[in-house]
Image 1: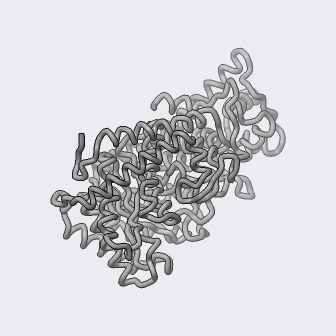
Image 2: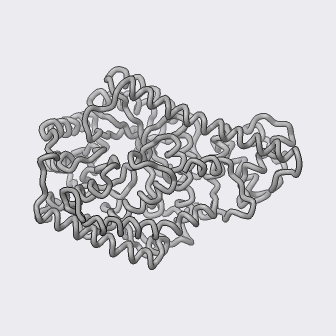
Image 3: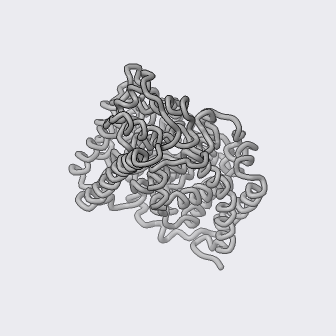
Amino acid sequence: MSGGKLKLDQRTVKTARRLAAAAGRPVVDLARGHTTVSVERATLRLAGITGADPDGIPWVNRLVDVVRDQVGLGGGVTGPVFQALTDDGHQDLTLLAQKAAAGSVTFRGTFRAGPAGTVAKRAAVKAVRTGLTRIDRRRAERERLIRRHGDPKQRPWIYLIVATGDIYEDIPQAQAAARAGADVIAVIRSTGQSLLDYVPEGATREGFAGTYATQENFKLMRAALDETSKQVGRYVRLTNYASGLCMPEIAALAGLERLDMMLNDSMYGILFRDINPIRTFVDQRFSRQIHARAGIIINTGEDNYLTTADAVDAAHTVTVSQLLNEYFAHEAGLQDWQLGLGHAFEINPEVPESFRLELAHALLARELFPDAPLKWMPPTKHMTGDVFRGNLLDGFFNLAGALTGQGILLVGMMTEAVVTPWLSDRDIALQNVRYVLNAAGNLHEDFTPGAFIRGRAHTVLDEAVTLLRQIGEQGLLDAIGAGTFGIMRRPADRGKGLDGVAAREAGYWNPAIDLLDGGV
């Protein structure tokens, strides 16, 4: 039983998926048994709360903090909030939050018995459903615009980054990039935002190596790219980051403002930002349910493992992570076409046969996930500052993408790790991509791997199965704590954001989870 150009043993492939599900299932059960401050805040954002206090702290944070202090998180905050809203005759969540922050609201942990509780519960469901209905409408709007403007004529989609720190500078750069051929614009998030336990409010002009992810920034960039889509005759997609301590909230805001892709990896925040593993997995499940509802493509972050671990020795950990990300995504309701699973061109170019090894790894990912729009990441780790060598290495990366039929190709920059790329650097990089993709055409149809590439792919898959067996015996949380991925050790009882996690108590209620679970 074998298939594809690599002639993978399909029994081994099925075993790998079965083992990934066995390793992931206890984590899903853990996520179903807990909530976090960000899940609860995201629910209230869907219900309509907006704005921030004079210090820039969102009212939703102020409200959830007061509810947590008075009655705890274990029962969910939506019930206490809407019971108070109904009891006091309030019609506005933001006004209630302002009064709560001033100390003039007392919350109770359960709905009142009788009609008063019924009215409050119905009001909560109605408000959250209104937010989800808006997400549904934005998804339908995307589909209409794709029919009107068309999709890019070729794959892979060309994915390009802007990162000025100023949304009003990002916009013209993003529009210029789209006119120059970019199909997907990614707005890099400001350094450190993933560790903020609140989402900044409004349009921002001061970021560090990126621009803050806010609802207003999403809205401004989406409108600008819609304008450019009309000009270039294809729908230009917008990407940002649903990760960090506010992952669920950013996912909700992305759905409300019609973003098209979001970086959303199951373990990135744990490994590279030292966010508590339980917090991450709880937040991740809710955020992916929102992405599924919104029709958003997720991008996972396996490429990051290869910046800290050797790309040859750790190749099987990338495959394991892809399989786990696939399992968690399917469980949350995402379809294969929404799985931008990550991998990267990061083998040291000095290694003999490095290009053949890269082809083996890329083709393995392509054949394991044939219906997923894989996201192929360019070389960064071994860029030296020699821009001529860097441009050549990016050309090899682009060729590997063409040969193996990747779905989303992030544009590599020859000045990577030297400076923040200039506009001229981006233009040269786009010329490189266009030349290779146009010259190669459908070369992947003619490419038939030999024994070396097939053998390497089989070896990596076998190593992935072995590791998945070990993880199943050890437990995924313990495996993460032991440094299995990216050589980072992240114990489950440590990390940022642990104090924002609570076990669900008997009677826990969250209308957003009820409505989203109904769609899984």
